[in-house]
Length: 332
Image (spheres, one colour):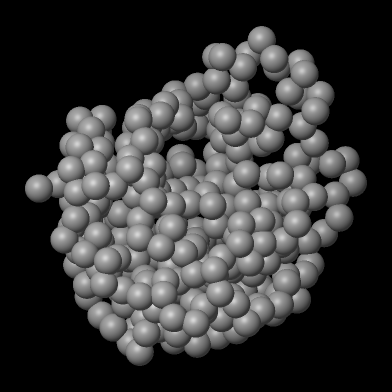
């Protein structure tokens, strides 16, 4: 059977495109590799961040619905996004994030050091130190030196009320291995242990309130598959066991199928290709608004209605929201 190789991308929601870009580019040092629009809502940006090339396993994307009310991370949702950082860089990140007045918490998980914080709109984030993080393409024009730079995803954490159905899905169906358990946290590993984002954590909390989507929450998580043929294989396999899987949707930079896992968790399986170089060279990734062909005739109206990403007098990003009790679900 095929196996899921790792995380492809994670998509979250933010209430401000401008503040979102300032934080992820200037503070975390991720590269904006594509600015396009939500294919289902063309007057809303879809922003993609990642390593220098937008390698699968490094891609964090956002729907910036301006002035959207705050959401609530909770059960049935990804409740923390963890990036990998070189172990020797953890002191650097500790100092950097404390200097930026983030409500930073430090700890340890399965023997690895963890820094927990949020972005300016409450999205729960983590940095996990790794002695040998996965190889990714460093963005040399960014603000973080190569020896300190984030190396794609380490993992993501979902909060669920119970484990049985999800364990069957992730282990028996998707081919992940249950590696470790600590209290109510279960760690799965996908097939390609050299790829960024090959860990997947599930925290079981029967009392957790249901998640509510809004600013500062995750919309969905996508796992990788190598090719269109493999994706069709997954579509057929998932439908065979009774899951409602969408038709293949062309997202220009990859193709996607979507389905709901038990407890409402929205999952996607995305192809590795064709990649972000399909409509612009690597040197200029993310520098211009790119639209699917069907929306090009609307470009003047779309550009008029989208907010500027880089204002002429940007305000510094110097605070992160406190980690609330619902966000602590991912800390076990």
